[in-house]
Length: 255
Image (cartoon, rainbow, N blue to C red; front, top):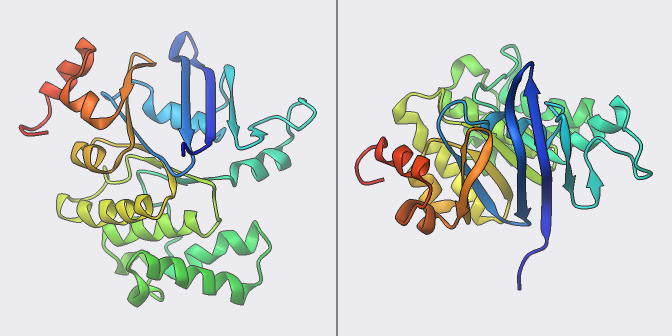
């Protein structure tokens, strides 16, 4: 049975001044699906991800998640900031940089959102934080501050922080790009486990092996558009778009 569409982006346009960064981008993501977005720097990948949850406001187009149109009320009018903040919570966002509070422990970094935003009591929020940190292999590090953790551990704390808000979809913006090479795999393994659990994920990444092995669908962006999309086997094994062929040729042998 085909899973229902959970996220639907239609006609997304984003301009910065005279430059069109996104030009009529459409994407559907089904529940439980992992969609990986690849492409050269400047192709619009990060901007598109940020438009999905309205960290960037599109100049045109719409984004729906389940039965909610992001940025709109049920009556079609524009959402106010309070309503938009509530809608954004349907997405978890993991950035390139970890953005952890340096004076807080891993547990407190993860528990802060549920406490402050969702109004969850402290004890319950901290218990959820420990649960998510343990889920990501950090059960022995809950009382450590970011300076006591490796980069890979810090990024897993950031993932736990996003999961603790109970999102419907996880968005990852090149989550391993700020890590030393030896730390990349532990973050990818955590993401791989989330995908296996059925978490719906949209991942912007340069980790092509992850894309090949984990994604249900791969999307190649170029010049602010989706130039090609399909299964990883199709994109990596039999690419049609000339820009995608050039992009893949520049990757390490064997990818």
